[in-house]
Length: 414
Image (cartoon, rainbow, N blue to C red):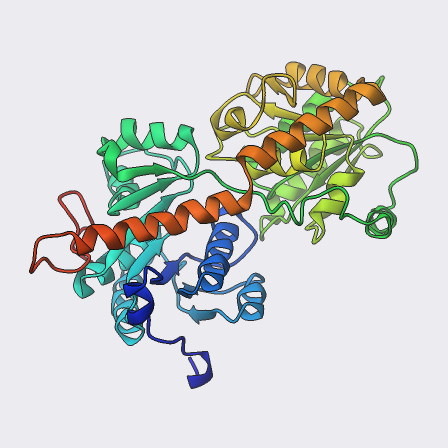
């Protein structure tokens, strides 16, 4: 880092309840962990604290730079044990240079290095559990378990909190449910201008008057793209265009597999894969139905809340965090995971809503998201958690090491 990039020391801020927080994650690409990290970093800085973010970088670095937040590039996406070991020393140096109070890890590989660095420096260690992670064998379970070794473990849904308690036998007192939040200043149908919507429709060459069924999400197999394509074979009598929005993140083979499946079913004129979209509010405005067809439970599944915030009818797999974001069949339609016939039926039902029903659903969905999944609530709860950790340290017995984890806390480093 250059001298210009150096954030100020956090000692006076921490004493006033405004800590220096270092968030650690693999990369800054589009995703839930990345979005959460940027939102928290910006909110903490606005509240008078000091934010640092360490990762391998990515497109979202720009948002940090615009907010005046330091980003430190380190090889934190690597699962190579040697690189992970070397990252410990790099993080120790960073922590000590900026007198970091709280180290907040958001992914498994960098969490191992972060936990060791936090322990060596006696700093507080917090984790956010962003997914169920495949447990598999004992080695895999141990690798995953680093995410429950924080002094506090943030679960981004009640579903994840239950998973943590049941799969890893974590003391419930260390688990905090802080649901993902939607930026309602961005995902607001009144702020998505007609010009933006028209521009995107022209870019995608969408035909006028044809209903759009949209599945947003990375081109990853478990997101359920194949199931949606199969479901469309049950809807040949319905006029629609299916738009699968999302980057393949170098998964070109999977994209090619989807394209072959589309061709095999004769759906070439009905399914479109435009890739990454920089203006998702405008995309949601083009959608008549938004689908979340994940084949395994999502930790949260922000598409469900984003779409509801934009007033879109949602069809979602009935499991995981998606189930927590809706009001029965009033703001969305659920189907059994993997049941393509049921998925088709729910899409048909959503497309059949008349104007009055769509308007009522949109109003109730927007109000529900505003009341329960506003980004400001997520950020306020996270900052309150940071304060809780600092106050708990102040109340600790005299001579206790700052940030030294209780039993079950951060493990010894690699």
